[in-house]
Length: 88
Image (tube, rainbow, N blue to C red; front, side):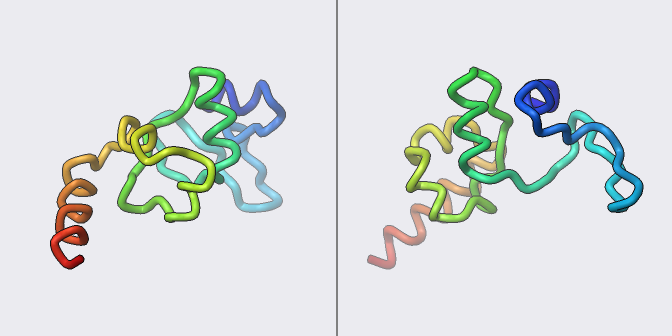
């Protein structure tokens, strides 16, 4: 994903000392906007995500089943969803 991001003009891997940004490496965890994730998904380069930490507004851009497919925490997210459905 980092190479893809750099290729579309969003270099996240190069350190920027004046902003105290060390640059990201593969395996780092960071926040990503939904639009950039969709762009990467359409290019076949979408990174894995923590569904439990994904804002519900992301569903305006990405269907839940696609997000779930890329979720690192799929089991935890499924349990939360089950609990919410039981409360309804």
